Image 1 (tube, helix red, strand yellow):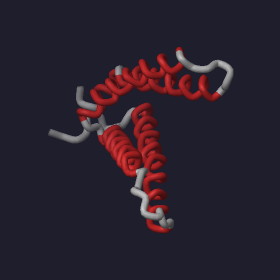
Image 2: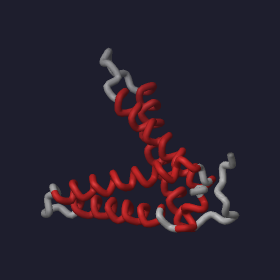
Image 3: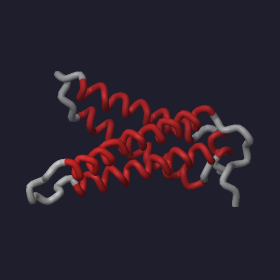
Amino acid sequence: MTLMGDMKRRPLRITIIGVVSIFAGLIFLFPVLGSFGLANLVDLSGQTFKQGPLVLTTTVIAIANFILGFGCLYGWRPIWLYLTVLSLLNFVVAVVVLYNADMSHWGTVVIPLLWLIFAIYVLISMQSRKTKAWFGR
């Protein structure tokens, strides 16, 4: 079993998705590193570390983004299915968020709209012949 698909060159769409995923992993990792540093520097006066579940969730999301990014760049077969299912879920969630959005604030419309556009972009990218060949499908 090889890690790369049958193609020698990675499709540009997959490169973009992989780099964006790695970048997102870095963004999710910064608050985690900051919260550990903050916990060591600030006296919490006997309170429990209430950020624990949030830090754990953010760490898992960061690791998943790194795996997704490197999986895209190296053509790991399971990443194609993972990205397709994740994009379908993101599409549905973005539509629901847009439906329930407060139209008087630009942020509640623009962010889900960008989310929806990126989900559609990934879905279209996953179905191209070159992408399927890169992932060995």
